[in-house]
Image 1 (tube, rainbow, N blue to C red):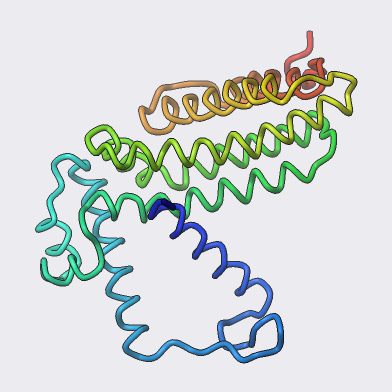
Image 2: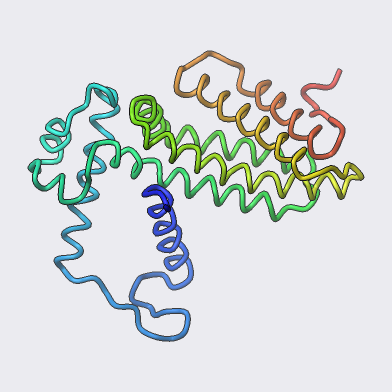
Amino acid sequence: MTSHLTRYAGVMKTRSTAADLFGDAGAGGGDGTPVKRRSLREEQKEMTRQKLIEASKDVFERKGYAKATIDDIVETAGASRGTFYLYFKSKGEVAAELTAEYTREVEELLADVGERVDPDRAAIKRWVEAYLRLFARHESSIRAWMQAESTERELRAVSDERLATFVSHLTSWINETRRRNGLEEPVKASRSRAIVLLTQLERFCYFSVVRGMRVDKRSAVESLVDFWELTLRGEVTGSASTKG
């Protein structure tokens, strides 16, 4: 069964694509047919839903996921418990909504890097830095999600699904890039490399952003890029700042 988070991420991606192509929802479909505009009632429902999501984000950030209650959320949103349950089954479902945008943006980053055939160190570094910025931008949502999945089993399954999607993207890219550099290997070996690189990157983000560990960002980024470059190209060219 497709998870709530995956369905939502798919919807968000479709909305983004339509906006990029047509500028607004009323410009028409790809086959020339008009796109039906949402009614005023539908717009109001979406506004209420977004208000609940933003209120949840604020409450999770102030109190933490475990201590946050539905009452806290609806009070912050200026809504009722009944209204909340019209849109969400639980606060865990709201946490899934909060990370849906992060998931979509990561998938876009992975799709972008997958189109780069045999990237050099500079390109790899730009991608790593883009991921770090993305993680930092969604830090509060990710923090809430981590707290939520530690207590709610169904959310762990969503995390596993998200990780599997990311790993799949990376595996194909790593396998093809290594082949182009004369480092051909079985797909299962590339998958292992993808898991190591991705978990390394995410754990660094967790400790440096969520936990606030003090670290020299410049040297940390260069170290991360070393691992990625070695994996992809079989060598580390190094940056001007790390040579010598």
